[in-house]
Length: 515
Image (tube, rainbow, N blue to C red):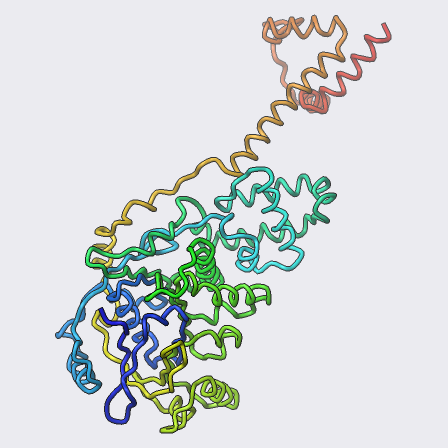
C-alpha cells in the first residue's frame, strides 16, 4: 500500500508530482477556490485515495455530485478520452476506474440512513449557536441543562427541552434564587426559536437511537475505508443547522476518541464543505472552541479538511494549522478580491520558478496551486499542479442506484425506527398528573373537613342515591324562555363549578355553624 495519495502534477508547464503523505494527513488541510474551478473533484479524488488506503472518510455532499463515489467511472463517459490524456500527461500510470464503499446518511432520513443525536449531547453552547440566542437567553438554556442534570431528566428530543422550559417558567421564582434571574420573556424567545427549528425539520436531528461514531469508522471486506456521505442539498436550506451538526460531530470525535499520537495514517478524515458557514457571525467562544478542536484532534488520529471559496473565510489561527493545501483559482475583480488573493499567496512557501499570486489567479479548471507537508511536517514548496482524474463516477448517481446502496448497507434498519424512551417530557408529565391527583384529593378532604354532620349526611345520601335526594323524578321540565329562567340557569351553572362550590360551602358552613 502506498504511503502517499497521488494528487497530480508533473508534466509540461507543471512542477514535480504532488502527493499527500498519509503520515501527515491528520495535520489537516484546505481546499479553496472560486465556484466552478474544481474543488468538488479534488475532494472526490482525496476521498478515493483515503478509502483505498484503508482510511474511513466523512464528507458532506452539498450539491449531490459526490454520490458518484459509489459507482465506478466508465469508458463510455464523455470525458473518458480527456481523463486518459490527462493521466498520461502527468504520469499517472496506475489510473483505473473503481468505486468506493459508500454509506449514505441524511438528517431527514430521505436520501440516507437517519442521523440523530440527543439534546444533551449537543450541549448548551452548540444549541445556543443553533438557535442564535442572545447572552441572556443562552444563560436560561444553561440553567435548563443544569436542572435536567441535577433532576435526572434526560433531554433526548425537542419536546423534552420544550417541556423543561415550561417547568422552569412555572418555577422561576424558586430557580431565580439559586441561578439568578429567570425571565419569562427569555423563555418565550427560546420556545419560539425551537418552533422555527422544528418547522425547518431540525426536530428529526434529535432523538434516539443516536449515531454511534464507530459506524463512521468502518472498513469493507477488502480493507477499504468506508466513505460516509451526508446528503446536504436539502440541509443547506438551514445553513445554521448544517454547520452546527458538523461541528457537533467534530466535537464528539474529539471527546470520545482515544489519544493515538502520530499514527502512520489517520483513523478518520473529516471534510467540512462550505466551511464559511461555520465561522459566519460566530461568537468568539465558538471560534475558540473550533480552534481548540482543530489543534488537538490530530492527536486522536482525525484529519480535518476545510473546503471553501476563499482562505479568508477561515480564521487566521485555524488557517495556520492547515498544512496540506490545494488552492484552485481565485478571481480578483475588486480591490477586496485582490487583497484576499495576495493574503492567500502569502500563506505558501515561495517557489522561485513562478509568482504564487499570479499562478493562483491564472490556473484553469482542474488545475491548482498545491503545497503538501513533507518530512518532519515541513510545508513543501508551492507547485502548479494538474489534478488527476477521478476513478469513480463524475456526477451523481440515480435515485434507484442510491436505494440499492442503502438496501445493501449494514446500517439498514439500525437507525430507521425512532425510539421514545422515558425522558424529561414523560417525567414532567407524570409529575404534573400526580400533582393534579393530589390536588383533587386535598380539595375533597378540605370539603369534608368544612362540612357539618348534616352536610356530610346529605352528601353521603346524594352519593348513595345518585344525586337525587329531595327531588321528584316525575316533575315536568318547564320551558325556560324568560329572563329570570335564563339568569337562574346561569347561576346554577356557576354553582356547579369550582367557584360555585366554594361559595355554597361558605354559605352553608356559616348557616350550620350559627345553628
